[in-house]
Amino acid sequence: MLTIDRLTLQLPYYADGYTAWWKRRWATCLDAFSLTFSPGEVHAVVGASGAGKSLLAYAIMGLLPTPARLNGQLYYQGKPLDASRQRRLRGRELALIPQSLSALDPLVRTQRQVAWAAQRAGQPSAHAWHASQQALTHYQLDARAQQAYAHELSGGMARRVLTAMAHVSQARLVIADEPSVGLDPHQRQRVLGALRELADQGKTVILITHDLRHALPIADHVTIMRGGKLIETAPSSAFQGSGAALTSAYSQALWLALPDNAFATTTISRREQETNVA
Ligand SMILES: Nc1ncnc2c1ncn2[C@@H]1O[C@H](COP(=O)(O)OP(=O)(O)OP(=O)(O)O)[C@@H](O)[C@H]1O
Ligand code: NI
Image (cartoon, rainbow, N blue to C red; front, side):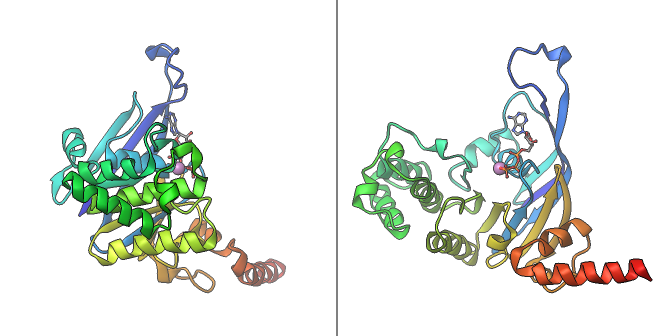
């Protein structure tokens, strides 16, 4: 349903607005990135900080910073997804749960913001108001939080408000950029569980995270990213044991670096030592 075809994105090194354009140097932030996301799947995009995960989300939504050099193609439901189509579908068929909490409007109470998101998605206002209340309650935001302003919410609460906004948009493609950062394990379960439910309803969910541990329980596929490049796409089931089902050394290293896999790491290094000795 969404295909990314050799997407290359360059941004200026100095985005200060003062560097004359002819002196500008460009950094490649996405490098010939190709991937297809299917309906009904949670597809996790995992990589270290700076890998280009958020920029990938912005490129799909049409929310890249300017100036930017973008090459390659996006296709949504078989048709090119250009800037005008992105504008039309954003907040309706395409929803982003942004990484930055500053996406919330500081001057508008929580419930009104969620209701606006529902209205933008085409719901009549009375229904939107009701839907916003339901969604906020679903994410355990009580009456007080529903009437609060963004600065009165904790980070975890604000993140749940953003999730509720994506929930009411009834989007067919939901991109969640680090949706579980700052949440306690119980809240994290709730938010990740809700994303899984959206996929089970036939939606496409892209889960962006730096933490493989949070992705694996709900993801069908995992794509590992590094330095703007796609390293590997594998089914979640490939992340087990010694990681032998993974094709790239980097994915294996990410897998083996998880705390619970410390045993596997030691076994491997011991084996390596033995081969070195031999
Ligand atoms: N507006 C911008 N102008 C110039 N460079 C940028 C801009 N935004 C991001 N970058 C650069 O692009 C690279 C990828 O950034 P991105 O935010 O996509 O990383 P990320 O994988 O989401 O990291 P994190 O896990 O920290 O959120 C980084 O090296 C970053 O410095
Ligand atoms: Ni990011």
